[in-house]
Amino acid sequence: MKRTLFNEDHEAFREAVAEYTTRTLVPRHEQFIAQHGFDRDIWLEAGKQGLLGLEVPEEYGGGAAGDYRFNAVLGEELAKVSAAFSSCFGIHFDVCAPYLVELTTEEQKKRWLPRFCSGEMITAIGMTEPSGGSDLAALRTTAVKDGSDWIIDGSKTFITNGYTADLVIVAARTSPEKRAKGITLFALEEGMPGFTRGRKLDKVGQPESDTAELFFEGVRVPAENVIGEIDRGFIHMMERLPQERIGSAVSNIAHAAQILVETLQYVKDRKAFGQSVGSFQHNKFLLADLVTRVEVTQAYVDQAVEAHNRGELSAVDAAKAKWWSAEVQNSVLDHCVQLHGGYGFMNEYRVARAWQDARVTKIWAGSNEIMKEIIGRDLGL
Ligand SMILES: Cc1cc2nc3c(=O)[nH]c(=O)nc-3n(C[C@H](O)[C@H](O)[C@H](O)COP(=O)(O)OP(=O)(O)OC[C@H]3O[C@@H](n4cnc5c(N)ncnc54)[C@H](O)[C@@H]3O)c2cc1C
Image 1: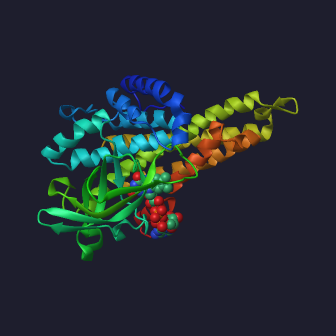
Image 2: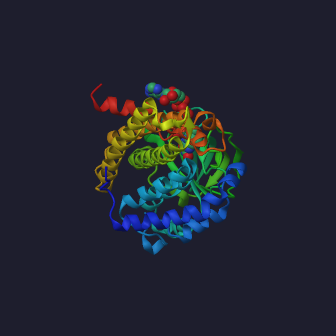
Image 3: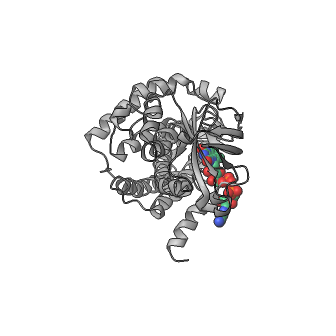
C-alpha cells in the first residue's frame, strides 16, 4: 500500500540521507564491523549534512525541523543499511536530543548543542546497570551532594556509543529513600576524573556499534551539569521513552522491509529443481505472508509516528508499536535466512548479519515483556 505519512520535503530529505549513507557508510561498513565502532569523521560528515540536529533550534546550529517525520526518515534510511547505524545515530539525534533540548538551561544549550549538531560531541544515555535495566527505579548509581557539586559512584552497562561518547546522560540516585522519585540526570563528560570506560562489549549482533560499560568512581560533577530537575530524572526519562520506542519501531520495520526486498530478489534468482526457489508454492505463500505482515505493521507504526508528531502518542501505543515491530522484524528475518539456505548462515550475506542484529530489538529500550506489562496495566489488569 502507498504510505501517506511523508510529503515531498520528507522524500527530498530521504534522498539526501541516502546519498550520505551510500557515500559515507556503505563503503566502510566492513571496516566498522572489524573495528567494532565507527570513525569520528562519519559523525562530522553527518553533522555537516545537517543530520544530527533535527530537533535542535537553529540558533544552536540545529535544523529545527519541528516535525518528527524527518527523524523517522533518517532512522529508516540508516536501518536500511544496518540496524547498528540506526541505533548509534538514533541514540544521538533521536534519544539524547530531547533531553538536551528540552531540559537544559540556556547556558547548557550554548555549551553543548552546537557541538552536538556538528558531530564534534557524540552522546549516549546511561540508564541500565549491571544489576538491572527493566526495573529502572531500582538503579544503584549514587550522586551525593558535596558543596555545589555532586559526587557520582556506580556503573552502567550495555551503553550504546558508550565507548566514544563525549557526553553521557547518566541517571543516578540522589534520594536513596525515594526510589523512582529520587533519581536525577547528570551530564558526565569525557575527561572528568574517575569516569572510565570498560571494554567494548562482544555482542552476538551489531558488531559495528560500540556498546560499553561505564564506571564512575568519585566523579565530581558540577551543578551546571545537572540535566532537568533534581529528583525528577525518572519522570524525565518516562516522558521521553515513547519517542525512543517509536524510533525503535521505525527502524525495526524499515530494517526488516529492506532485507525482505533483497530476499525477494534472491529467491527469484536462486534455482532448485530447475525453477526459482521463490516459485515453489510454499515459499510463494510464505513471502505473501511476510510482505503482508510488514505492510500491516508499517501502517501501525506510521500511525504512531503521526500521533507522536501531533504530540499525542501515548506510552501504551508506543509500547505496542515497539514490541510488535520487534517481533515481526525477528520473525521476518528468520524466514529470510531460511529462504537463503546455507548462504543465509554466512556472515558475508547481509541477511545473516541482519538476523543477528535484530535479536536485541526485543530486549533493549524496554524488553517485550516490559512493553506488554505497560499495555496490560492499561487494560486494568
Ligand atoms: C546492544 C544493547 C544496547 C543497549 N543500549 C543501551 C543504552 O544505550 N542505554 C541504556 O541505558 N541501556 C541500554 N541497553 C540496555 C537495555 O535497555 C536492557 O538490556 C533492557 O532494558 C533489559 O534490562 P536487563 O538487560 O537488565 O534485563 P533484566 O531487567 O534483568 O530482565 C531479564 C529478563 O526478565 C524480564 N523481566 C524483567 N522484569 C519483568 C517483569 N516485570 N515481567 C516480566 N518479565 C520481566 C525481561 O523482559 C528480561 O527478559 C542496551 C542493551 C543492549 C543489549
